[in-house]
Image (cartoon, rainbow, N blue to C red):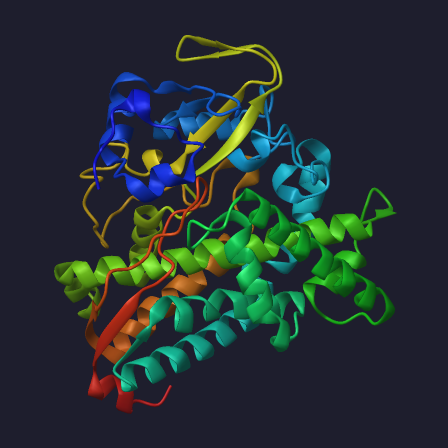
Length: 410
């Protein structure tokens, strides 16, 4: 793919990411225009673009001058707001954000998730073992789509028969696998997810269980119980966050390792720790390309005067390749340490599901190490189309079995 001149790039257009290699573009911005203006296009508002790691972290920390309550991704920022503002964790700030976050952290803490992590391990090893023994698989569909959706669905108490339906909706909600899916289709998918969980919440109010939805229904802030809308919006956030980013990271992990035999060898032979490898996989994949904020008062960044309402987008896709922070950022190095990647954001809105995502990726890597001596991508993979997420929708893979590992009983 070609690298376009900076003044021709429209970061609001999903086709930009599907059709171009933007590494050179991001490097140019970091070096010469760390506060870059993406002008209005086809009736869409213009917005500011931050590309340096330190600027992104500083803006994430700055709750005085910036808010997430007018949207936190381009699709909502450019529409003027998010319907979940003040109720959904990702687009809530201030004291209510703090209280809502405490509720969700209780059910997503490492202590509570130990049992969930064991289930992730069992499922992942079973599915990887089966794929290796059969010689190969369509990894994106048969494994990467199953691990995170099964995990988050178990947490939320989503029946098994509904999971393929929800997976199809999450794939359409913020990204697409083909050009025929437009913003209307994506908006309909988002609405269908909300309607689905509205029905589930009604069922749980009548018959509570031990799942996250029942826990949310029983929670309150300042003595006021969470409303149905509060619960539904946070279920939406959990299912989108719990599925999309982990799935895309896993697919990218296999794609990258298949093309980097030396890194695979290092990992296979125990030369790098699993935890260190997980962080590099996350940095390299950077599945969430950006988040965004709106200025709430006049402030200044890199000499640019921001006015209230101005949109500032924070690009992980660039920050995770910033030469000012990472040595040889264009190299995939499973032994990289330290690794201050931005895959989970930073500051008050740091991803509440980060522990679970790391568990899923770690178990995938461990199962690959134990059951295969190597693997290769057998056909070109298809990229998703999105201005928010990046990655592949297909990943056909052939495995070389590790017969010694396969003989061992888990």
